[in-house]
Length: 273
Image (cartoon, rainbow, N blue to C red):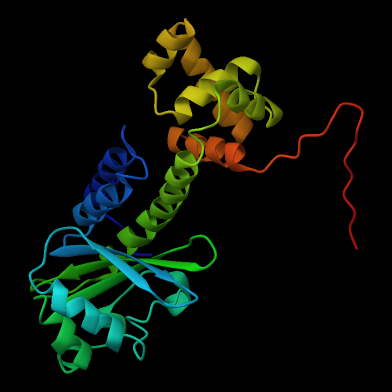
């Protein structure tokens, strides 16, 4: 990976703080991701696309309106298949983010039919792709597009690789959270206890998952903020994580696991072979 400057590391950190800030949910995820990518890899346009693996039906969202999109995007879907740069194959470049320069020079790119019918129409002349691991049957990519300016480079690839796991994990977390809103507080707490937290840690973790700050959790539970900080540190230790966002993902994964509830006196055994 390219060695980033101190300025780039600071930019990435501040951008991730904004990305993970209060209000990140299923409804805001894509716009937050657009803002994150545009800050760390300057662009003219960012695209988010999902494709169903069975029928290859594509849905694409753009960070802002583009006058040529109504014509260019249907042409893209029609012409993309022969090109590794565009054909939505998660195995391209072993899943590592890739860009136009990995496949074509600028002159070669401009000679392609897909450039003429899509990128020129949308006033774009450079492309970067980031694959996001997702649920079976769905293929997800972010596209970062530029019009003019410098070509994408190894600094940009390193930034994209560092953002890639955050984008994938956050998407998983917000989708899981959206499906967990029906779980009562007591059910959430009991599941977290069974995952290894104490009763009080489970209460703190529940409100952490709900996006509350330490001071807000202290008010809700009638604790000192320093006590909440101690519980949060213990949650990090028990969950084997190092920060709040990772603890959030861990908690959501615990709550999203299917549970087999057995009557008293019954046992459950697994067999192998």
